[in-house]
Image 1: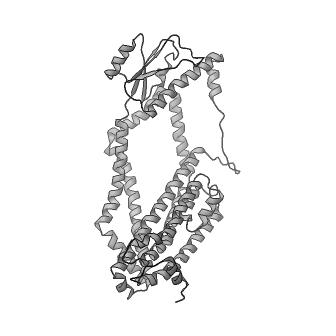
Image 2 (image 1 turned 120 degrees about the vertical axis):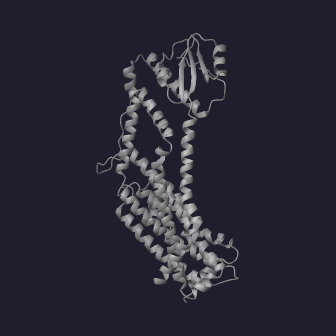
Image 3 (image 1 turned 180 degrees about the vertical axis):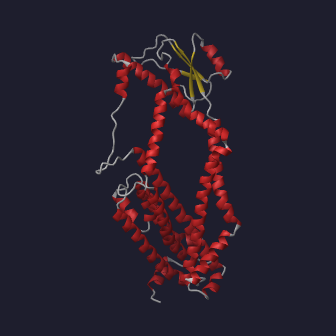
Length: 446
């Protein structure tokens, strides 16, 4: 164990003390934060009103379009303005478009159309929002006129009964919780998928460099190949864990500093989100209900379980795949491209696990999700998607224990197999290694 710790410490310090480690560890989250801030900045700066002048000679909208105004679409009612005058207002950029509804407009027959005249091309999202606002008023007026309903009766018809999902124990399964569990499970699974690829490849490259530079020959004279491999895996894994923790701390810290760095942008965002709520009491109630639903959904998620499982599956998945990547690195000679063909069988389970995870985040109790969460080569990715839904809703206690046990056994098995490949491949030069040759190494007794 002393030799393994020495090798692990050497691998850790040799990478942490490099300038590239500092640049990637500190620079990457700052870059992400900068892109995030620019997105917010341009989203606020480019959110100009699209103003539409409405000449409603048939009195169809009855001034209700003014109530539909928001931070993006603004309607202005005009009277007795000719088309040429409205066109000049577009040219002077006082308005962006105009609508003229003649007195003969028939709302019942659906034969007449509403023509929106603009000076420039209207974007798809803006077009859909304008059509949605106009169609809502037209549909309401048609129903009130043809069915002789009052406004109160129409509002009652448009309201739907509340549908609630509950478990057999009587616990409510809210839609907000399901959506948040979907997002947490997807992000957690994708992070582990990303980690397995990045740090597994880092282990392989570290082994390849020592072999091609003949450093491994000197080290193996003092330690056993298995100790060298395990020390390298632990050292590089420690680098990855430290780097990952620093990323989380920096990203969270920068987001907390966002109101201090961009106070004007944050105030504009708050003003835009509050504007529709001030316009009508119903919008304010809906916004408050949405926020309350999100807070309630977050409180129903077992964060202690998710964080604990993430650490376990991060370490278990890394050690399992790092040993396989180290074995592949030990078989490569002067040509690094030889590793590509040997990596394919190792990377396929990782990709397969990502595919299963896409199904597991939506249906955590499906047969393929249960299999993927227990099978050691895919469980680090798939199980995180199921755990996010909770225990026992998303995964039972027995399945979680079975998955952890299988992952530990899988790690021990892959480490043992990788050690047999590593001890032979690390000292072999001048011969291209194939899977057939690797099979002979695995079957060799001594």
